[in-house]
Length: 453
Image 1 (cartoon, helix red, strand yellow):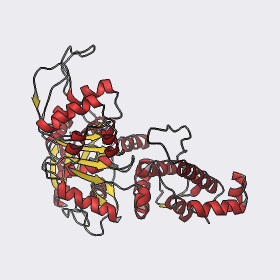
Image 2: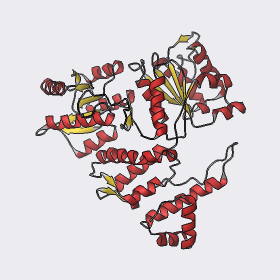
Image 3: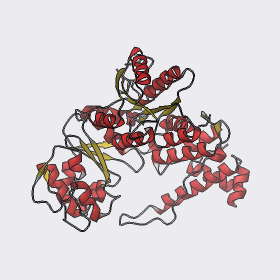
Image 4: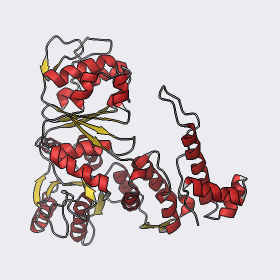
């Protein structure tokens, strides 16, 4: 049974929604206090939250932001009698699923949007209460992840097998493949579901700040420490902590993390007392940790402690059969966000995307579709509105080196794809734009596997 939370200070409206949705077969909880609702959400997980826009103390947008900070995957619908296009766009940008105005037949519209949201999340099929988050045969959605590719089905199956074990998990995969979504799916499938999920990017925070973010500090332990502060290990007590880009963790913090993993204790910066913590650790990296261990850049004992169960996420280029599913998902998402009627993509635009390598993986595909929907003026995405990420020519060369031929092929392929888009698929025009012969272009297209008419 899908679980819905209603937040509205108008008792009459709140009761109408509660009765209506209960009759639809949903498990409904309601409150007039948005601050109380925030506390309820810390203890219970809801499939959908419905909130009024105009409320005392904090408004619906502020409530939405707070819920999204707490549960980024939460589905939220805003309801108001004061609808405006700008407000709707702002709500969608903050992560609202949709927006319903209290006009004529608003109850019927709300039922439709609720059903749509729960189907999108994979909670219901044609009738309320039928759980579809278990990735049944033929279902392409699994806790925010989209895919029917064989390797992704294996990932979904592994998540279900290991979610409720205490074992630490290491998620391996390139940037943009959705490693945090996997971590959240593991948490959502575990007995820790109602406890906190905390994520931190080990490579995105300066070393001098990372320790305090992880373990907290005591008042007066350094300049600016005006009060005691808990780190995310304390805040995640009883729940799950996700350590992204673990390969970037500095050596001194590797030692401290190893102690947490082994002994389940740590100390705040400037603290004298050990703090005991029960937390499930999920790590992720886009690096070859085995190689870093060999070079002495990552502790071997920590690696084996974190890598009890490895989960490999394939890059998008290895699961091209999922590209159309993802494209449709992103078109639907951004068409709603930008208030557009775009529902499809032209066959040639689809062909260009199917033949693109996506070095940035799913994150890059989503960015491409978001830009395309924003720029498109018709009701279908056309090839001229596809904008691929510009290749980085100022790339750094680390100790591992690079495959120069591979990088040059990638850059050349991207340039040909851009020229094909600009010329609307005409190879003759493309050759002219690139100042090469038609035969040379044809040879390069065959060699690099570039799509075209």
